[in-house]
Length: 430
Image 1 (cartoon, one colour):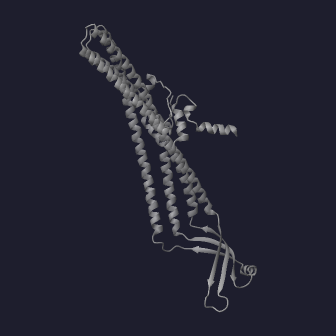
Image 2 (cartoon, rainbow, N blue to C red; image 1 turned 45 degrees about the vertical axis):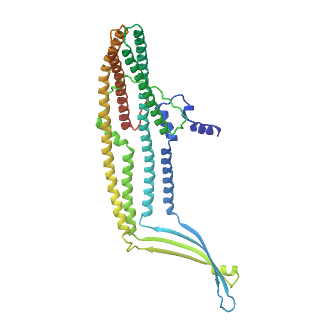
Image 3 (tube, rainbow, N blue to C red; image 1 turned 60 degrees about the horizontal axis):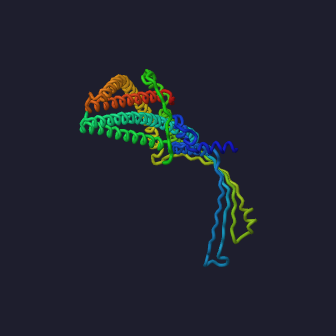
């Protein structure tokens, strides 16, 4: 018992209390237990299960006790002017046949329960993909901070060197001011990068339903060029797997089956209904015999069979059948629409991922060229052979090349992971 309580308490603690850094799996597991939308969806599941129990209970007979009491006053009567009467009855009823409505309603309730389970699973998958994108964006923002921190260090060193040249009368104060301006610009870019990182972390905290005081730090992940530029699987295979594993399509297919049952339930309105009724009762009237004698003499038992044949119902049955058929057509269209939507999603991720991989390959060459150019320009600047404008251009080109390479890298990784998710309905994130 104590072990169970302890495990429950640990599950309620913030995950940061159990681990120093968050992995993607940590985020998914925490969201599974704490995301409010997901918890509400699970409540819908529970409500559907109760509705199913209620549907099954329609096979059970009904039983109720009824009693009535009345007092009458006859002001102009001769003799006793007041009377009291009461009745007591125990009544039972059971529907023998209702055109199959009861059986089909139970089937519908089972389907609705399954649909709500699928909705919960679909919501969890949406949360997983949202987490994947936010998690990747945080890693990207974190590395971007490193780029701008290095840029600030370099521009600071260049500014210090420029000040030495000014003091040695080898550089004008105007040139020094330009380099100092570059230094301030790099600091500003660093502040922006830190702000972006904090915003992305806030998005993650909101998705995980973490409090305002909670701290979160992600585990570092490294990818090599082979992983970044990995060949993508055939797009047709991915689409087929996406359709086969998509919970929304499965839910829509069940909705279609449910609409067919709606038609059967509606048609039951045209069929006769048979019900069985039975009861026992008695009554008492005063003034008259004693209560015990009156109850004994008034005791009665009854049983009856009722046949109800619908003739006219103001087109209620006809309208219900028509509406059920419309819902059936709508369910088919929703399935087709979802398949088209999946095709567009998968194709867009393939286009974005291939584009990111191509940009990454080009950015690698650009980055290496910018790095060598920046190193050479810095060496010449330290010797006093390069003017500030050339130095600033070289510096900015190098920073931009780093940023372009980083952006292409994370777009390629995100695209690959999203494709993996649509293929397997899960994703392996280091």
